[in-house]
Amino acid sequence: MTPAEAEIRKLARVLGVAPGRLAYLAEVPVEDLRELRERTTTVLFDAHLGVLERMAGASKLLPTPVLAKMAERVFGPLLAARIAGLVEASRGAEIAGRLSPVFLADVAAELDPRRARGIIAKLPAPVVVAVARELARREDWITIARFVDHLPDSTIVTSLEFIPDEALPEVAALLDDPSKITKVRDLLPPERLARLPEHLR
Image (cartoon, rainbow, N blue to C red; front, side, top):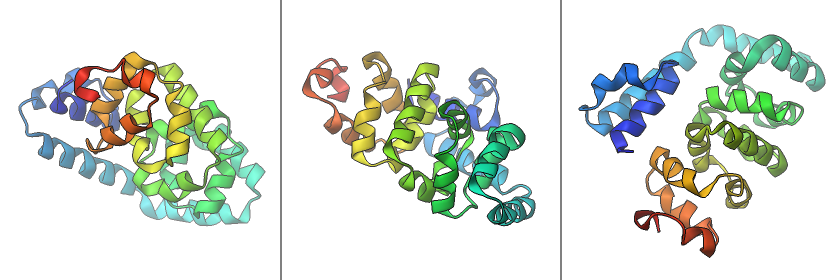
């Protein structure tokens, strides 16, 4: 996968379209594609910001168990992802800890990790690992790659156990920061490292 193809796949995810619909962007410089994706993400997440901020403020009045049930049964993953970045980090992590791994994986696919890094940092490792396992089951390598920048090494090590060797090059290609390939590589045990393509060792 070329860097341009990776960016097109990530932009397609943000827009909710098939990557083939954006094939005409293949000749656009990678830096411009990345800027387009980041601006698009900003526009989508800031849409109806006032309403979302009021919802996040109102959530302070409700008990955490009630909010968790509302998130799964009423809000859905898209709205939950939009609100996540507006909720106080400790409370957001507490709510997330009460959600099912399947629903959290749905939310993770819609989330901009940059906006929820406080919540991500406070999530218990078992919760993150359960979500990583579910994302790996779905072969959602885009979402997994987006979270590498925001997880502690110990959690990444455990999560890597659920990613098959053949998927690691794809995850590496989808990282926003290519220098993070070195981080992932350094966390792999020697026997797995030896099975990687030569350019990733």
